[in-house]
Amino acid sequence: MHRLYELAVERSYNTGDIILREEQSADYVFSIRRGYAAMVRLTSDGKRQILAFLFPGDFVGFTSEDNYHYGVSAIAPVNACRFGRAELEALVEKYPVMDRKLRFTLTRAMDASYELLFSLGRKDSLQKVASFIWYVSYRHKKLAQPSNPIHLPMRRSDIADFMGLTIETVSRAFTVLKGMDVIRLRGAYEVEIVDMDRLRSIGVVVAEPAPYERNDPDYYPHKAD
Image (cartoon, rainbow, N blue to C red; front, top):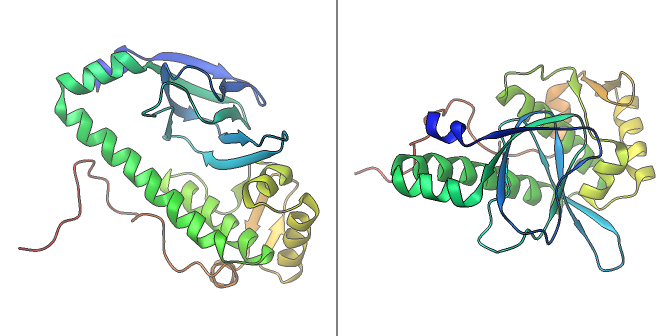
């Protein structure tokens, strides 16, 4: 890991800055150290779809293609480590244990994303917003950050573009949850969860994206002998 971070170049980005561009040559991998970012794709008619929100500890830029098929922009001030893709691949080839650790990190992130997408895909707008608030609280808890009240670094328009809803629908869902005494709004970017169990029930959250306690990066589930 010391050799890995010897390769790192620290980069800072302000809110709205582009970290990597769609169709740009995929020469770098980034690790988010502080702040929040959004993984974005544009449709042919210029509409934006947010594919994922990136939290501290997340990696982005891994691809088997020559170019990125998505862009990443900062939705809050971001501090990131940038690694040259070729140098990183050479280091992984030299130290196989790094391959296991990186695969663990990436598969955990994919599992969390798939669970969230599955969760959101079959719900109405109120259920989607409730489960999203729960998910952000969950991610903050995993990062040992305050999970209630939670800081929502994303704007209502960001949440709408992620869920495929309108800004008005997202805002209405926040108002309804507030009226049900499930949450309290402390400004545009902070939410207090008054009733976590009810929030989870409204959001129909049936599974956590990944276990809380498992920290071993060499762990892989396997069948009992």
